[in-house]
Length: 140
Image (cartoon, rainbow, N blue to C red; front, side, top):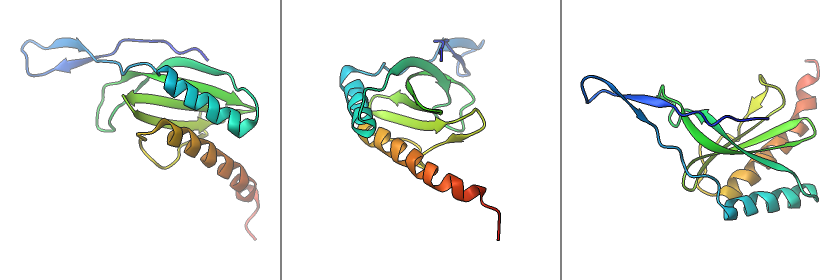
């Protein structure tokens, strides 16, 4: 996957005429955060998993219309893609997906601990795999 770092702008309504101001991007993942992610994945899968760094444009709050570029860590295991978004220093969101229309979260909007975020993401996906065959059974 290739992620583009695109600057997004928002309107400042307190100034006339309206002016565009660049939204600030959260800082990139630091070495400590990447170490936690890599070690958690190695512990879960028993081998090194290649992670990719990129940027993604997301809404920092549901009520906002503006998109803000945020750093992301992405990895893939078999047919599952995992994404961790860094929205602020020590603030993370996560999801996994199979296809574009099969996106799943953990049920927690945002985490303040990268280890908890990645661990819950992996646990949620493992639980999903266990429940998925049951969802395909016909109603008896």
